[in-house]
Every structure is written in C-alpha cells, then in structure tokens.
Image (tube, rainbow, N blue to C red):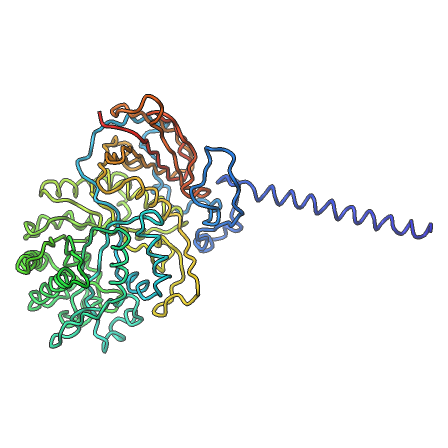
Length: 577
C-alpha cells in the first residue's frame, strides 16, 4: 500500500495541474473573447494589405442574450451578425474626415431652415443584378427582393432604374467582348437585328425584378441605356469603340436609336400585362467619360457633345409624338465631367432632370478632398438651379476606393451627406444593391451565373452598408425636407424634417478614430412639454448593427459619436412653429 500511495501522489499532482491549467485557460480565452472595443482586438496578421483586404465583414455568431439595460437594445438579432473590431484603417489620412471642420464638441441649433428641395427617395439600378436574380426560383428571388425593396423587411428603396439593353451580336461577342460572352453583363436587347422585328420575350429576368420591386412599393421608375444595339454601333460591339475615345453610335442611326428607346418605353406603358410608366428616360450613360472601348466587360458608348444635344432633342420629341408622359433625364456622367460640359449642350429645354454620378476622383495634390468635393458639387448645384432643373445622384458607389469594408461604408455615408448638403440633390441611387464585388454589394450571397443559386435555401448576409442605408431610408422618407446644416459640418452631418411623421432626423458620420461630443437643440421646432417628444439614437459601427443605444426625453440631446461610426438621431412628435 505504501508503494501505491507513493506512486499516486505524482499522478494526483499531475491531475491537479492539468485541471488548474484548463480553468486558467478557459478564463484567459474568455477574457480575450469578451472585449469588443475597437482598440481591444488586434488582427491576426498585419503583414500586408492583401491580407487585410481579405478581411471582409468578419462576423461572430453568438447566442442571443437578453439585454437587461433598456438603453442598449438591438434592433436585429445576434444571428444577423455584429462585426468584430477592425485592423487599423487603410484609408489615407486625408480621406478620413472629421464630423465638422473645427476641433472639439459640436453644438447644433436646429431650426426649420430648409435647403429648398423635397426628397424623392432612395434607389438602385437593375441591369445585370436583375439579369441574375430574376432567374432565381420565385421563393429565393423574393427573399432577396424583400431585403432591398420591402419597407418593413428591407430597405424600402422606392426608385428603380431599368436598363434597356443594347444587345450584343452573338456571333461577334466572344471575340470583341469576351467578358460579355459569359452572359451576366450582356443585357438582352429588344431589337436584335435591323431587318428583324422586336423581340418582346427578351430580358425576362430583369423585368421579373422590376415588377417584383413595384409589388413591394417601388413607385418611381427610370429607363436608361448604356449602348445602342450592336448593329447601330461603329465597332459592331456594344462594349464600345474600336478606336480610343471615338463615339460609337453611327450618326445615320441616331433616329432609329431614339425610336428604339421610346418604343420600349411605350411598350411598358401601353401593354396591359406590363402596365408600368417610366417617369424618365435617360438615353445614355457616362457618354463623356471616354472609357468605353471594344473588349470591355459591359455595355457602354462614347458620345460627343453635338450628338448628345441632337439625341436629347430627338428623345423629347419622340416621347411627345407617342403620347407618353415620360420625360427626359440627362447625362449620367460623373459630376466633375458634367460641370464643364453641361453649358455646351443644347436641347436642355427637353430635360426635366439632371442626373449625375457620385463617383469622385481623389482631390488634386493642390487641394484637400473637402474643398475639392465642395467645389465640384457646389458648381453643379448652382448650374442646376440656374437652369431650373432638379438634380439626382443616379449612380454611386466606392469607385476607386479600397480598404476595409467598413471604411468604404463610412465613405459612402459621407458621400450621401455631401449629396444632400452640397450638391443639394433630391434623390440618391446606389449602383447595384447586389453585386459580385464584395466592396460594392449591400447584400452578400452566392453568385453563379447563369445557373443561379442551386442550394435549397438562400441565406443572404446584410453588409454594414446595408445597415447604414436602412438607417437612412427608414427616416429620410420621400417627401421629407432636407435641413440647412452649417457649412463647417456639411461633410459629416445631414438633417431631414418629415412633417407627415412629425420627425426631425440627423445623420452623423465620423470617419476618425476619436469620439466626438454632439449637443442638439430643436430651438426652432415645437416640442411636447410633457416629455412625449423624445430623441432615439442608433448607431452602426464595427461592433453594432443599427443598435438603439439611447432614448432621451425632450427636444435636446447630448450624444457621444463614437469613432468610426455612423449615427442617427431622430426626434419624434415634433411640429413646425
């Protein structure tokens, strides 16, 4: 027995050591897993930009915990994911704007002073996202459409831009535009050959999405063209010209091209089975950019100023001759290219609205991004007002921007705020809500064109940008009036008054790592003295997805705007004095 006891002592000690190690290890891992503060978690590797770029919306899937504190209520379950803290921002320091241009706390006195526009809404273009999703089985297509167009289940986008395809030459497409040959971006045209009839069975997939959006509440529709049919082009290729910068529409086909577009619009309006009236028709897309060349992966057509002028006038005349209510929109070029060209273009009397794209080149080395954006957008706004034209951002996205996905989402939030305050546009249309490029998409799900998603259940993931847009679309509804914001804060804060809902809403983007203090006073509005008026604060950050963090009674609020976050504050039960 003595030998047995002696032998068991080291075994007991070993077991005790192992148990102690397990307990210490458990609490050590728990301690490292629990902190969610931005600076408390480091990336596994920072050995290169490529590795950091691959960190696309890292998520945790924790069990739903019931929050005991009423001031920290999640609007979406944990199953929809809260992102972990990021590696350091990859954006250049010059691109990380402060909320306002002055240091220290921010104090805003909000009065019923309005920019002068009435907000028309939020939207997206269809094009190849429609060409893909419209081929899904109905239940899977419905899941995706709900997330974008349904008011309660999704973003509630009310503006839809439908692409009237040019239609490539099936015999030449593989050698002229090999990327188009895959089919995803090869939008079907309705007039496939000059000698043949219109094919109204074409483009069924995109129409499925268009009509599905209408069923969910979309009520503003625009048709636009990227290229004429292949047989009208100089190169025979809907992707662009064979010669760099050369216009690609043969002059003798200008009349037929206009007739093609207006005939499609007429078909939609007068066919009882379709019964959809386009509010506007945009005859071209980015015609001034001169980067549409044969062999590109999507449809596009360079045009010169004289051709644009002729097409605008001809389009307006053709719509009237067909007895259509549809008006003309133009030019769908980048804002910085529209500014110098617009005064040279005739036929503007036919144009109801000026469409610009919100892509912005990095500022010249002699200017910082704030002054450069202000300069371009202010000029465009002044031109539109001088012509008595409404202006929209009809396309936007993180063009030319790289970095962590949330960096890009905050950049896009700033882009929206600049659109409202400086460009003073009345609508904002994101390019594609569903995109195979994770830098652009609002919703992540498998892309497998043309077969579609083959799984039995589709499980899309909302991106951080989806939550930011949900915060915007749920408060800045069509009919709202944009508020005047001090110029020093016009890149970081936007405001709206929705008189129908008695709501004043503010949106704040903070791209910097440092938190900012914001005090708001609705001194120019009538608030309820019995405390019915309240301010609700929501935020999206690396940690939160549209989390409701505070409810403050009365018409005043003091809020901490966390670093690298997007925050909304909306006051309810507010009246204009």
